[in-house]
Image 1 (cartoon, rainbow, N blue to C red):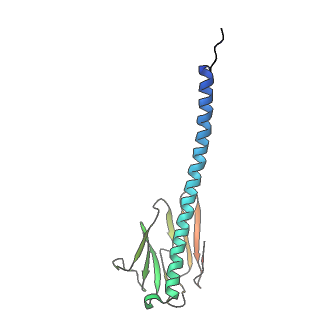
Image 2 (image 1 turned 90 degrees about the vertical axis):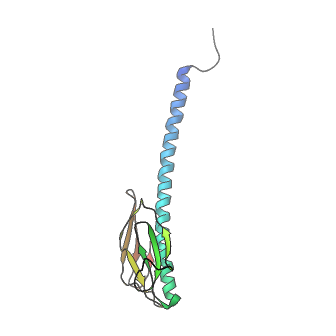
Image 3 (image 1 turned 90 degrees about the horizontal axis):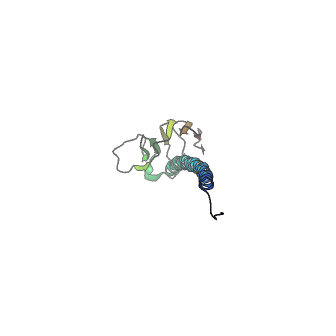
Length: 142
């Protein structure tokens, strides 16, 4: 007697293979998403630094402009000193799973746009490391 259909063993093998293929795809997708978040964080910080330099070069508010990196935010501010209570500060939330080391504050001179210090800001999430470099002339590379 012949029956048409699939045996239990055949169904289990097909389900196992599909589960394995799905798990590989999920791992690749997760790594890709994590990489995208990391690159977006670097781009966000670099763009905030560029905006601070542009504001300083434009002599906006007739003042220097800078960026202060806090645990939870990137803060764009005006003036020679960072004042956390200044209502003009522009806060941008940052990804807390990405560690930021190196320079924690950069101030660009009014008109010239030269930074008060040059150096690197390093970002890392455990798997990836990226850097943003600021030269003595204010050039921002990432």
